[in-house]
Length: 420
Image (cartoon, rainbow, N blue to C red):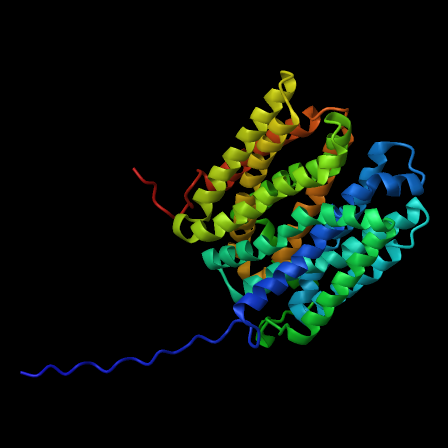
């Protein structure tokens, strides 16, 4: 008896979720858009004393406003971009935001007063807010679930090299020019991204998915996001840990100069700490599909509070050194790097049908809330690391409680049976 083999089924390639742009280019472009935010913050850090002196700031803690003013604009305006992106598409809103960022980066370079600097920094943040909202919405248009978390992690590997290099870039510019050229560099980088996106980035929102700007519909989208326990829980937890990160960024330059008296090693050690976040994002991209977003991020959140607690104890007992601080801070930030992309993906997952609005709400809450928390932590700087580390421990512990309330348990989603 002869056996007739069944004919092979033709292999049908799935259409690209972003036609005309390969996967690697897509990830690189998304990472570049995310990177403008990190550059606007971290490249400033070595220049804060010079900026403060030239603009006539009397107190060191006032310099933190140069970071916080940007973050306030960055956080507050995200609430606007989501509905606009759902109505007009992702591409035009993104291009508008990047163009605004480039223009006001250039204007900031010509600041001669603290007030004008604050104005340009706020509007610079307003422009950058579009990148935060639109990158997440674009990725959500194209991917979902663990695949979305993987794409976000790959983007963050590139994105997180920015905090590693940005302070050194700022310091290098200061060696050959004034702080004004840091802002000019930001303007040039944003202009290059604007041209790249204009030429290569397709519209990812399908025409049939565009939503009119109607008060009732927007209110319903807000209600959908703000009444979903998972979305709200992870949004609030991310706000808390992001507040801790901003507290470190606000205080970092003063910590290395005033606490450890090591200004020359600031950019190097800051880069090592930032490298731990990038390493965590790489690890996350390799393990998240196998282990799941909850097991990875919940374990990391516990580690975040633990390492911060050990660092705080060394400070309180007088055993803290620059080496111990750097190692424990890097371990804490490694754990942060495992929470960020996963918390973002889990917060977006149940509200993907209103992705633009959801992304804007979540960006508004996490960034604005985190900026305020981080500023309050930074303003407590008293010549020691204790206020900052105490904030880490408290915020990390509170985030664990928030996640537990949202899920009802840790490490597994509610719809997954408990393992005996």
